[in-house]
Image: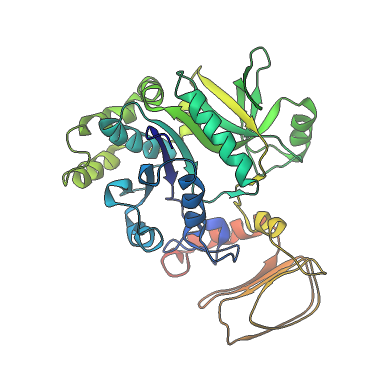
Length: 365
């Protein structure tokens, strides 16, 4: 493996769309939602440990999740666990990792990736990322991975490519970005699919540190001016207090909006390796095995009859769960919450919003 190749895993989200299984105290990246014996974070770490040296993987997460990271990834050193004291979206997360790593290895080329993606074609994924690392190490472009869309999906962002230029590397093509578009409505998503110019925005990035550092400083000086003062404190005991002060003053902004939509160096590296961001219950429902009636059932002791296209989950192995005459519903029984609702992403999102508005956040979220 190339010792100049690194991976930054972003693991600070709260995963509210998987409520009530995912909570602020234990978000979805730390949960085995798929029932495979590993959490999202563990699967993500193993995936990238096959691409870059294990000691070159950094985890950026919230301070409150330090213990969870150490429990699930004890092999990761404290120097490689970057703790954010406050939520500030992904641009400060990237800036923190960039400036810290730059003091150690300014020649690094990095992958930046969320901690909760599902990858089906692992071999093709590795080939894609290794090719992207090699290309990104030799130029100043900022690459994102674009996924060939298979349906007019409304839960993903899209990237439009410019076909005026193309770079070919083996089986992989890359194009300059023309536009970024947030989640479209159904009609617009169909138009995107028909044009052949739009690809799903995977939220994964590849670039060398010198290039991203330069574009961060050009596009987000209000962010980089804060992190730039830490050259002498990164990898020292003074880092924690320094970062706390930085985050108190740092604006909340995404790397997509703050840099990728502003830079003229954004390129899309195209691939199709079987990808999902698993951002909602419906996305998990589509990916996990179902019974003959289209149900996802995770219950030790159950009587399920005349139930179709539903999710039934119970955290208590000693509880008998009886469900009859249901269709397209979710029944999720946790220790302190019983959720019964239609199986659609909007319903769960609205419930979480209602709980927040009713000041029940500390107890139930």
